[in-house]
Amino acid sequence: MPNYRRVRIPGVTYFFTVVTYKRRKILTMPDGRQILCAIINEVRQQYPFTIRGWVLLPEHIHCIWTLPENDGDYSKRWGLIKAGFSKGLKLVSP
Image (cartoon, rainbow, N blue to C red; front, side, top):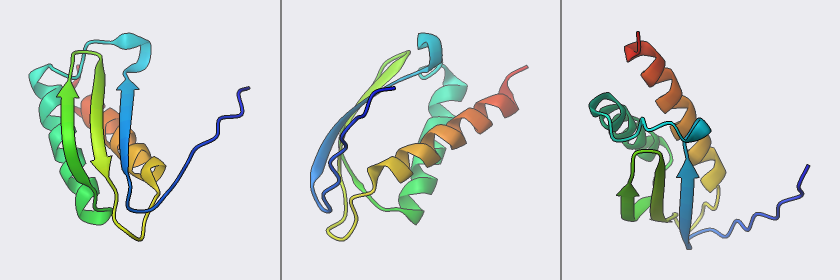
């Protein structure tokens, strides 16, 4: 298993690329967009961050975030976004 080094510096700007499981093209479907937007807003209320840029493609996301001055925990935010999106998508899928 790889031993990734993750830099966590409070208050800095990060670039992320996130890909869906098996590159499923679910992000730009109407339900997918709506769920993603809602869960991002929920997470931002609890764990604030500023979105500097966002590119949404069918199977992946590119985004640029700036975290608060006292918080460098981007992995917590991504974990909540991914979990919330997955749960939300299961609720609307047949």
